[in-house]
Image (cartoon, rainbow, N blue to C red):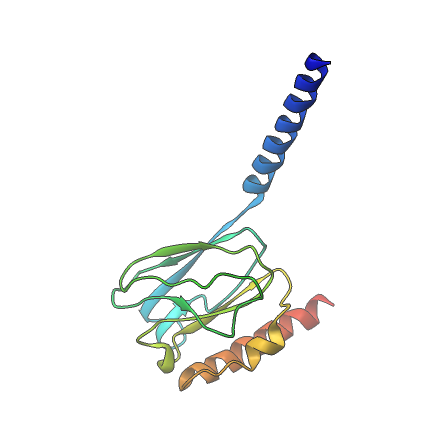
Length: 156
């Protein structure tokens, strides 16, 4: 009986390890650059809109110094942890909760230096759309939500 228990325990452990390795093997990495002069306007994340799967990692790359990244309150899915980086430093975040994640550069957010990550399905899109954002950030988010809605319509 003890041998059977050990065999079952080893089989269970092997199954768990195999599952973990498959999950981590399927995760992808995405880069978002923090730029002084972006492709569309000054002070920009590039790209501004990223669509990923749960478990994928986004690397915010400090291509130009003087920028930071932080999640925007009200623009995170339920249960998701907020994130924040230091000025001039790159950070990486692995996102596991499905939904819309809005983020900004602390000093340049009101100038429109904001972006959006869609993880899986945009489960909190309505709430994210109603989150208050200042200045040019609002204009950028209107553009990003239009792009998101266009993608959703095209996939149906």
